[in-house]
Amino acid sequence: MKANARTNGSNPRILNLFRAKGEPLSGDIKVMLLAAFLIALGFGLVAPVLPQFATTFDVGATAAAVIVSIFAFMRLVFAPAGGALIGRWGERPVYVTGLLIVAVSTAACAFAQNYWQLLVFRGLGGIGSVMFTVASMALVIRLAPPQSRGRVSGAYAGAFLIGNVCGPVLGGLLAGFGLRVPFLAYAAALVLAAVVVQTMLSHVPAAHRAKDSGPAEMLLSEGLANGTYRAVLASSFANGWATFGVRMATVPLFAAAALNAGPAAAGTALAVFAGGNAAALTFSGRLADTWGRKPMMLAGLFVTGVSTGLIGLTHDLWWFLAASAVAGLGAGMLGPAQQAAVADIIGRERSGGRVLAVYQMMADVGAIAGPILVGVIADQWGYGWAFGVTGLVLVLAGTAWAAVREPMDRSQATAT
Image (tube, rainbow, N blue to C red; front, side, top):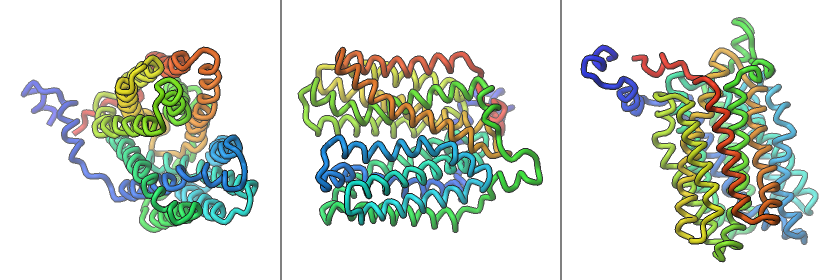
């Protein structure tokens, strides 16, 4: 194939891009995609009703917001422990255990009798969530062939995206039967995902195999000594700040305060962001496998950063929606490349629990700190500065990527 490409004057990377599109995913990868969809679908069932359910215990908006943030806080605190457990038990046991912990805690939320019970049960769910999140990343790294890591990461992100889009719609319908019903449905979805992974996944965790064939786990110190890993941490923080923090917390406030638009406009902005994200995921993973992780990271961070910065300068609803769609496109460009880069750094022959835990922690720190700091900036200097700072965080992460080498083995991108 290489010889023919040279003879015909064609670019072999372009040929690989189209050939990769038709390569079937392995059965184990499909199992992971199904589990990802079920998890995201279930989370989407609960997300719209959780704050409303909290207020049924006669608490105000701040206390209801704490119910949402406690989940992220517990994920952050217990991420190192989750990484250590992967090194000791292996990826699949930690994944399944984490799913079951969240299932039990979510079902318990449905039967909470007061606010403090709800707070404790939801917080316990954060522990299980970080366990299965880090373990799922480790499994995808282990299962994805090196030449298809970007495409597999894109497919995995797509499965989550579809579940996140479908979940709130179904959750709103279930809420008509009572605010406790979505919690039970989420718990059932998680149990089903755990059964799927436990019974259908044929993969043997890396940490178990490595007992007889070399080091079981990549040390965190080794990761931190790698410039590309440090760039990944910077982009993970920036993406968490902008996509998972400011996008969800500040965009609705901006739509109401600056554009005099109602909740429908904010919801539309989130929807067009998801649409841009979905559009990018159709090609960004394959491009990350052919052109490299670094070009896609630079492009994604720049596009997301500039478009996010421009949101704060918009005074028209249509420009606001257009900037949101472009930001979603940029986020979809960088996501698969970022996870593929982490896989390149760790490799398939060892576990990377602690390395992945810190990577996830950086996104959670960004998601928690971003809305708070941006809220302070918006109150003091306005939304233009707030979104401008968010865009700058993304662009600065891009400069970190500009200074490091390409992590992908390019010989795998052109291999026949």
